[in-house]
Image (cartoon, rainbow, N blue to C red; front, side, top):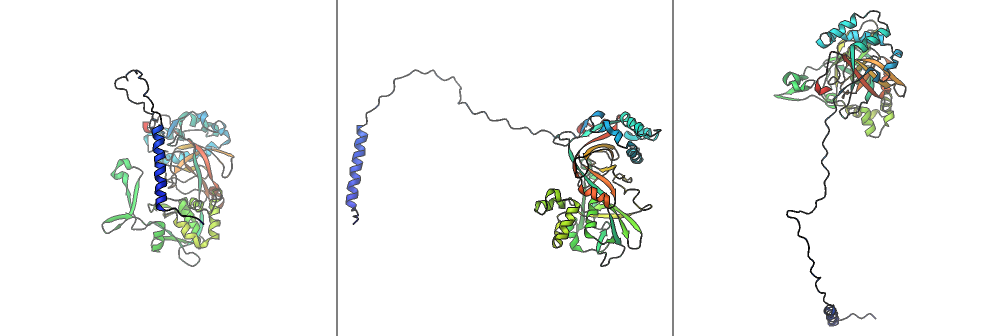
Length: 419
């Protein structure tokens, strides 16, 4: 049987152990102090050595957006004979209708109009003599940017709402207030404020989701048969509508609700619904057909909403492109949309990129004739493919890397802040 020790026994044992410990301490020999050793006195004012801390990194200033270049530095320019420069030159003459109003371009445009012969060889020599290439550089110093594509869609519609044509294409609403901030503050040039008045307050205008909830029927230009066609026309900025009476109209960008553009393709990628290589226009439409109950949720991921105005159409409407931000008709496969903070609208641009969905070089003289809400940054471009279905297929596939050189009159030296 296990015996439990009494309290007295525990106390006695504890006392014995304590006595042994103390005895052990008493038996330890005493150590004599070490002999005195003379030491040199420390130098006056000497402090302990501190660890060396790394110097704080100084943020590099953003790179200037324009870098002077030589013609032989332009990717593909030495082989530009393969490109029909005459086609681009005719587009530049159209730009000159606007550019010639600016002193810096007046002499250049006059020289272009006086050019005789206008063979591709003559045009090439004229560009090299008259214009100076400047490569567009991103703030981080990189020289490659994103090149996407856009086009002018062809929709089916009617002047009247019906079960077949239930989706409105809106004109500019009367309650949309548009304020050019540059008119008040010059340093805010290229910035615009949009909103609506409620009482004495200026409030943000309706987002896409809020606008859809209003279910307004006023100021509708036409009604379309496909919701996604209307949505993608807002992204493209213009389109043609084949009406049920056989006529055709063109509608162009008039205004926007002031909310930022958000890519629904990116939203689908972030939601894990599509892989990056699947997020083309065709891939997005395919996803929508498979998930009709989530279509409005998808569209609302882009709060931006575009309003249109009706334009005239000459002939069948496919020969001349829609007007771009410069105010001249866009030229299929020659016009690009750019960020006007860095590129002069109307200027020629040498673009070195690849064909949609491939590595095959696409090196071509283009014209900066348009802008877009999603086109942000110096080396950023949106390539106009033209009108109709085939152009839409190419535009939907295009998401390439590219380099850009803007061509400016040799007499023009950009400001110090740009070069």
